[in-house]
Image 1: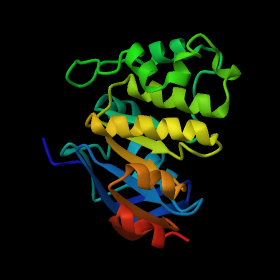
Image 2: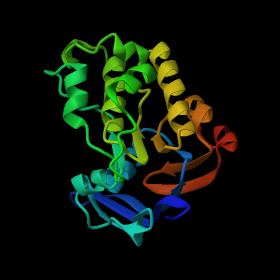
Image 3: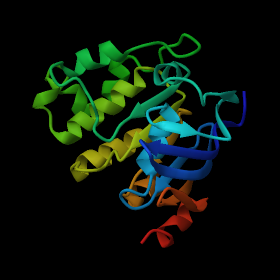
Length: 229
């Protein structure tokens, strides 16, 4: 077991022939929340996709808990303990909230189930009221909460969140921020791609500023507001 849960050195990524990431290096420690900040199109989402193996990538080192994952497919990375909440949520809209959660449930690497359904509904009270509602009848914010809950039923050790506040009502953002703080206090590591610096400041210890696919700055989250325009 290593102190750094996720280690990335020299990460490059491509969409077809177009290179999107250039030599990116970062790390997420155990129980740490880290922000990826930058403008739209800077490469934040691509970084998360590259970690999950969803785009063509190459890295000097891409390791989870000290083990190389650079050649592994997405489903193997998920089974090793990485939960991913994409920007477009990708819930099953024809299924209810409970059915989405039941379909995604799997034990953690140690066989445990740290996130039974009732604990998730306690974490997201609004979602508890919608347990029998289909995904296509939910608002964007409600779908986002469901997407996060669905990632948690896989019992991850690392949670990748891609722009969770985008297009979401402020009251839902507030509830999700409270939930994310609870997750962090529970020992979950979080890598958050987000343009909302105020949300990052509520949750994150450190930040990496990405622009045009390159790392421009890294440091304490408290210093990040002066970095992003």
